[in-house]
Length: 616
Image (cartoon, rainbow, N blue to C red; front, side):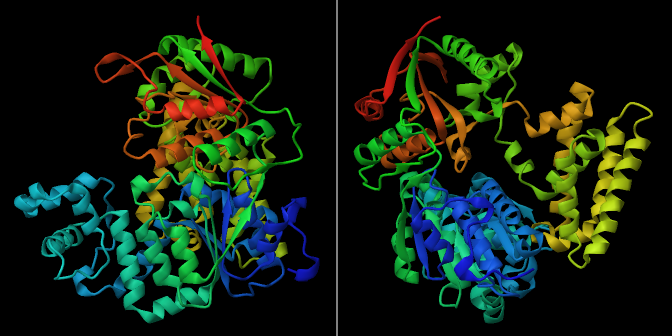
C-alpha cells in the first residue's frame, strides 16, 4: 500500500478531530488523554492507529497493541481501524482485552514457566471467587475463619513467585499447587495475569520479543485498569522503546469495587513521563445534556474539566426528566406507552433505546421485559449477547448464514468475505477473486442443499460445521491468538449454534432466528457497567432510589460516577424513574431517596431536569 506523507495526512473517512485530538493522533510521545463522555476516545485511537500505519510511522514489521477493559470495546476499536485503513494495514493492529492479552502470553509461552507453576495444556478457567475461597477453607480452616475474605483473595493474586515472609503465604503456595496440578489445571483470570507477568519477568527474551513486536501501545478506558493489569503492562513494556497512549476519564471511574487502581493516572505519568492532555468536545450528547453533565461535573464530582457540545446540534436539543411512579406496575405500563409512541410515531429504532439498571437486572427489569414482549415491543437482557456479538467466529457464522438465507443481505456477504480474506494474507489480488468465487459457490450450494425441505436442528449444526470448514479451523486458530486453544474456539462455535437453534425452534424461520440473535428491533436492557462505551438516542434508568444505590453511603464517589456514566450514555434524552414502592427481598417495600438525596438535588439545581409525577 502506498505510504502517505505525514504532513499531508488527514483523518480517515472525513472525520473531524478537535485540535488536541489531531495533535495526539500524529504524536509519538507518551500521552495520557483525559476525555469525558462523547469525546470520541475510541475514534481518536482508531485515527491514531490509521495515521501510524498509513504514514509508515509505525514501520513494518512493527505492530500496534491496543488493550481495552471490555471485550466489545476491543472489538469495536479493531473494526474501526479496519474500516479506516483497510484489511492489509489493520493486520498490524491487535486489539485485545487485558484478559485475552494475558491469556495469549500464557498459552503461547507456558512452557517457560518453572516446574512449580507448570499447568496442563488444556486448563479450566475458574470464574467464581468462592471456588478459590473453598480451597483456603479446605487447606486451613483456622486461617480461613480468622482472615477477611477480601484479604485472602488479594493475597491469592499477589505477585509471583510466592514469598516466605508474608503471613499466610505458605497456605497460598499449597492452594496454588493444588489448583495448578488438578486435572485439568484450574486457574482464574487474575491467576492467568500473574502467570503471564511471571513469564515476562523471568524470561528476558520473551519480554524483548514483545517489545520488538509492539512499537506502540494504546490503553483504553484507562481509569478502570486494575493493579494487576497495570503490573502486567509495566512488566511487558516499561523501560522499553515503545510509545504509550492511555485514554480515560476519572469521572467515569466505576470499577474500584473490582480492583481499579485509584492512582493509575498519576502512576502512569510518573512511570512513563507522559503528558496529560485534555479533550473538551462532547460529540455524543445534545447541548442541554452537556450543560447538565457540566453541572454534575462541578457540583457532584468536584471537578472542572467541562465539555463543549458539538456544533451539529441545535442549542435547545436534549432533555432529562425524573418520572415518579406509585408502584412498579404503573412504571411498567406507563413506560411502555411512552416507548410505544417513540417507536411507532417518532420512528426511533428500538436498538436506539436502552433500559439501564444499576444491578439486579431481573429484580428491577425482569417483569418489565416480559410485559414489553407480551405487549408487542421486543426487549431483552443484553448482557449475555455482548460476548456473542463481539466474537469474531460467531460474527462470521452469523454473516454467512445471513448471506445464505437472505439473498439481499450483501453487507453480510461482504463482511464474511473480509473475514476469509484476512485468513488468507498470502493471496494476491487475482487469487482473492477466486476466493470470492469460492464463497459465492459455497453460499449457492448450501442454499440449494437445504431449500428442498424444512431446516432442522441437525441441519443447522451441519451448516455450521461446513461454515467453519470453509474458514478452516487451523487458519482461524493461527490468525486469532484467542482461539489457539481449540477448546475455546469450539466453545464459541457451540455458543452461537445453541442460541441460534433455540431461536429457530421457537420461530421456525432462520432469518427471524438470526434477527433475534443479533437483537434486531429489540430494546437492550443492561447494567450500567455493561453500558460503558455505548450510546443510545434515549436512555431509561430504572430505580433512582436508595434501594438500587445501597452502597452509596459506603462508596459515594464511585456511585456518583456510576450515576454520571448512566446519564452520559444518552445522545438526546434521559429518563430516570423512581417508584414509591418496589418488589424487594421481603415483598413490596417502600422506597426512599434519603441516602442519594444529593443526586436528586443536583439534577434539580441544574435547571435542566423536570420532576414529573406519572399516574395511570
